Image 1 (cartoon, one colour):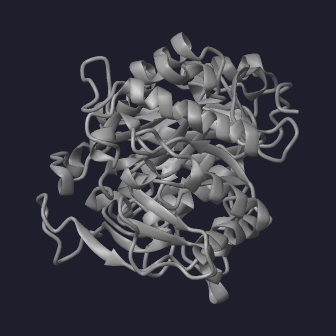
Image 2 (tube, helix red, strand yellow):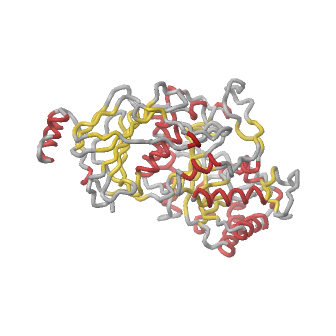
Image 3 (cartoon, rainbow, N blue to C red):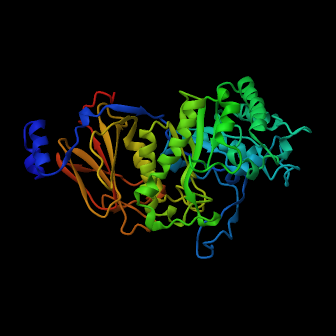
Length: 498
């Protein structure tokens, strides 16, 4: 059927042939633009505790319990000068590098030649000049722009409990003097969980608004090029309120001062923190649509309090508290790419994955920096999916998710991402030749993934593998069960893809 339809001379004839055989038709030239994402859309976090060293979420393994015990493990500071880490991060650039997380809320910046071995009173950890200089050097080396937040713990407070900007001022000044730049900053990490995140007891929206004004004035006066991002809420939907301070109240106190609206999203909690989700649910519509529910809640608040501001998802992964045990396997690749596709289509400008290389949700193994399946998925997205998001104009099919962008780096070209989460094959008719990249695993719990039948792995001297496409003629394109396929269509001639 594919050859017969492809041989027909006109698109009308091709469409009629496809319809006769029960296939939907893709017309790449007739896909209108619906959204625009940043060039640094796909970005990542390196948590502050990774930079300083300390107790972070313990990766799952034979000695890790499945219950909410054995939560943390001591880890040394990340080596931001590691050649493999830099090479793999650079391959995802340009990007934003967010250095934040809950630990940042109580981290003391030691603005001196030698850092204290213990944090001062009111702080839990110490960030040295050398460590922050490593962040600056890393960002420059891999073409990443720094995003961060500041300490808000007891050590930053004056006698009346008001936030003192001295620590933030010192970090900003040191960054400038070291030739660095902070592209964007949130006041604190996850203020909706303020009682759990080092803020003073009883911290409320009024206190946040008061402190945010100090932060706002500091940025505008000393680092005016830095975007003010916020509030960075998490854990709220229309049916559940935050356990601390509601994003609605935070925005009422601060929305006039933000340049970018930010929020955080995790589909669930890992078992470390009491999560009960099972790997069997990871390919369900209910599981994958959780990102839509979260965005819808926060987007309504953005529209009410900060209309027109860009939306950034500044922290996300499969599960909070280090990730689920399957996040280091090919199974999470479906969630990872589907989330990127959904959010780009819905108008989110930037998505920052947590983390680049920490615990189970890292794109890279935290000990070896070897790529996990999500890294290879990120690399394909980065290479193929451009900034302009297109409407595919095909009807939804159960189990088949379609996302289309202008192709990165090719005028007129279109890139399509097809995610088949079902146990049956799907197919679409395409009247143009394409370049095919299909990701599959022998078993979904595997820690490796295959591209067009070949296992992806680093070569000698950490060389990235040849991620070659399979040339595919015009006709019906089939998507196997439980597979992910990118199709690059260079001859699409879409007028929106300039």
